[in-house]
Length: 168
Image (cartoon, rainbow, N blue to C red; front, side, top):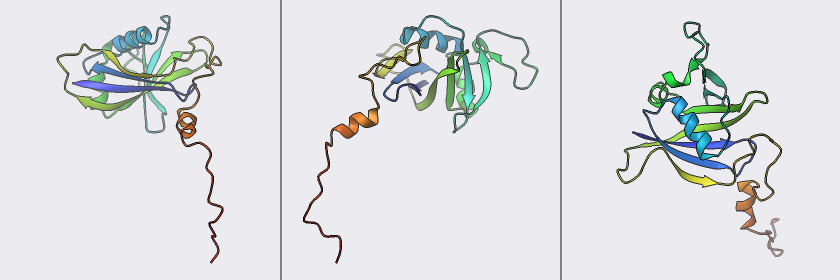
């Protein structure tokens, strides 16, 4: 099965990436694919399963800490596949790429499909706006404003009908 994951950022409302990946991919492979596709330098990162309010539930770290027998202890990324997380009803992941300042991307499974034999996976299937700067969270490009503002610009100024009388 192919999972389509949508990645968003709370630093730039216009930033979107859709990834199509195999459900057999482990979280370490997903981490490496994300880093490569957004052209970030390799960094310490963690995935977290998340509930509907994006509250972190379980951590998956790059390093195997060997403490999996303790409830809530991080699990090594290489030991967990996306299929295991989706089967356990987790449709949201937080990808924390900057541990010192709690910067993260938010991933959600938006569809599941059969692989297309004409395509290679993993792949970026959609992208909008530039990636937030890896090292400077305040470096949002001026032309990457809110997608809402962009959509509303198409409507222009609303000029009401001066002849309309709302009193009877």
